[in-house]
Amino acid sequence: GAVVSQHPSWVICKSGTSVKIECRSLDFQATTMFWYRQFPKQSLMLMATSNEGSKATYEQGVEKDKFLINHASLTLSTLTVTSAHPEDSSFYICSARDNRDYNEQFFGPGTRLTVL
Amino acid sequence: GQNIDQPTEMTATEGAIVQINCTYQTSGFNGLFWYQQHAGEAPTFLSYNVLDGLEEKGRFSSFLSRSKGYSYLLLKELQMKDSASYLCAVSDSNYQLIWGAGTKLIIKP
Image 1 (tube, rainbow over the protein chains, first blue to last red):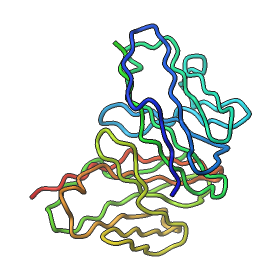
Image 2 (image 1 turned 180 degrees about the horizontal axis):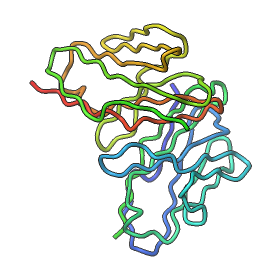
Image 3 (image 1 turned 90 degrees about the vertical axis):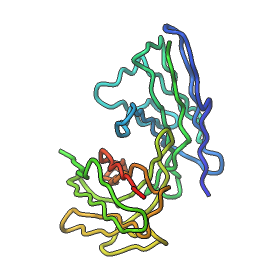
C-alpha cells in the first residue's frame, strides 16, 4: 500500500530557531502534497498545498515567509518553521496525493513540534 | 462557501451500533471520505464514496446521497478501540479535501 513517512516524529526546539520537517512518499510519486496543522482537540487545518517544481499555495492566514515549503522532487516535500515561537507548537501532518489516483490522500504519521 | 457539518461528539455503548452523519455543501464533488483519528495520531482512511448508496467494509459501512449532500458512517459491534475522532472530508472540483471538524466518539463499557 501507499506509505508516507515524516521525519522527525517529534522535535523540541528553543524559541527563535528553525525546524525542518520532511514528508516522503515511499512507494509512489506525488506531484501534490499537503501540509496540515492540528492543535489539541481541534480538527485538521490545511496550511498549504505543495506542488512539485512550483511555489506552494498557502491558505488564508498562513504566513508563507514563516512556513517555508519546498517540493523539489516527486517524493519529497519539506516544511521549515522559521524563527519558531511557543505558539507554533502543534502537530504537523503531511499528506500526499498519488499521481495515479487523485481521489485519495495518504497521510504521514505526523510530527509533534514543541517550542520552548 | 464550502461547508461540512458533523456532530461534535457522540457517545455509544460497547457492542452497540452508532451512526455518524455528515452533510456538505461544496463547489464540485469528487467523492467523500471518512477517516478515523486517534488522539495524537494522524488520520487513517476508512472509506470512500463517489456514487450513491452503501459501501460495506467489515464492521464499518458508509452511505452517500449526492442529491441530499449527505453521508453517514455506520459502526457496528462497537469496541472500546473504536473510541476516536471520525472525520468527514469531501473532494471538491479541484480534488482538494474539504474537512469537517470531526466527531469525537466515546465508547462506554
